[in-house]
Image 1 (cartoon, rainbow over the protein chains, first blue to last red):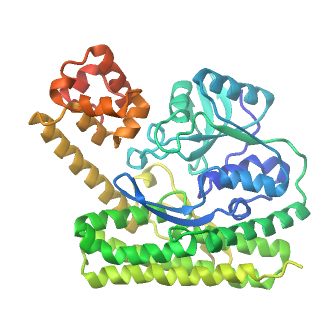
Image 2: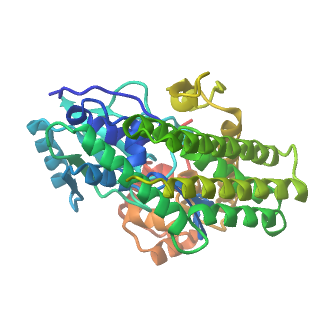
Length: 337
Length: 130
């Protein structure tokens, strides 16, 4: 059994899945950047007390699950989301949705995801894919980061749906209820709500670890890494920062380019000139994140590594923090009448 | 748009967002970027090093093969606890060679499943994957 479903590759898994699951009702209008922006996907957080893969816990995007939830909420679309305690009921529920004709989004772990190259398999449990059918024992999979569709045996799918560790998916699946056609008016409202959400998330979140202040905080920490961690471990930490920023799923520049693309698409719906100007600021932020990544690579490849090089690296982040603060403040002051 | 060949580039190209000559955003396919390929290499070199150190510790009887497989499978005690069903304090005990050697095959099977290996390979620290 194979549902009528068109695979489309995207940069980021969750916004890609969101865009694909809403394709039918939106007539393809909810593109990946729109899903990412309406879902207020752009974020920054560095949690110094937690270690992931023996390195720093850094994220450039909002918490897993929120993009789909916020996008559907902002568009007024009811969402079905379920977790399971038993593997049997998790598969049965999936099978029933497919029988009803619903493609289903699944949260999975990538460590045992068989079609991923081994180099990319870490214990990362917030990957998203769509199941759109089953043939014999094979589930048909549309993984947004892959160029083409793929498949997993029922055992392989069960294994990744019940991956263990941080953010364990517990068989989690989700899909939007059919609502009929999504109008431009709905999209306009959703865009404004998404921008407001993202402004709050980056400017008003309390504490020093997250939002634009979190970027500055990281910059200041990095300047101390050389003395505190030693050159080798500091290099590992910087490599982890760059992976979170540039690795598959980000669209490049720590999701800043996707967000800039979102603001251009938002302009097409709302005709506010400011959106185009602010979009350029996010492009500049993405570029500066990439410049910082080149500096970091110099350090972890051992080409450079003096304290001055670490200071420069830290200063890049402090500069980015200022730039993004300006950009979000400008978004905040747009008058939506 | 950088087109350096990454591990993933051999399997799939990835979507990136970039501006065209008029400043409008478009998606483009990239097969990778040196800066991040190196970042990934650095991470795996570190894993290889940790795994090698763990292997030596097992050979010197300072640790049981659990330590080796944990490093090999990128697991910490908490992930292994979730996969195997053992408590963390039990795992810490089982990491001592003298305790590990007394475990029955039935109990070892849970670890073997968690690491996706055979019990015999678990005991002998054997891996079959490249």
